[in-house]
Length: 207
Image 1 (tube, rainbow, N blue to C red):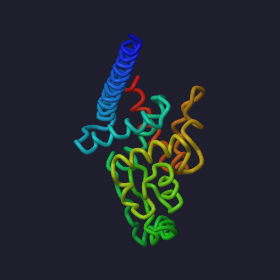
Image 2: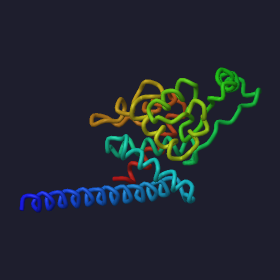
Image 3: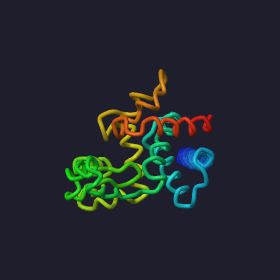
Image 4: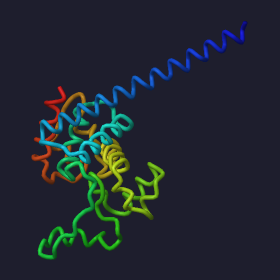
């Protein structure tokens, strides 16, 4: 009798667990489709590749984020600005683009130039992400171009302050939503105003 009761309890616990997984899967699916619609409202039509990228970014945010839609909106705005939701490799500047060309010279020959949704750059950053995700980005840096990894690097890096030492929570939190200064999470204040406007377009549609 006791064994039967134990089996029933275990069966009920397993069923509850499976139902919970189903609910989480449905919630993620709804969040992904909402994000795609929101990005299309903000930026225009998204093709299949871009839609898949948005889904992966939202999935990464569900894993590494904190549920704050303001942060997700800014992450999506950043990915739109940096790569239009396509994991890309940084372009080599022409010698006539003196400032950018000279800056790229510091790392270009190493092979650790920008890749992904947010242009992961410098060997130490590839090493850092390799440790976090247990993926060999150091010996195979092009793995950072794979959409799933690119999305995780983007979200984790911005949430944890991996790129500059500053995290999204420093600028977007319960007390303030500073989409302008939040650019410092990735790249000082380069194009900060433009990305802030993108973020506002996204978050206003989320509400």
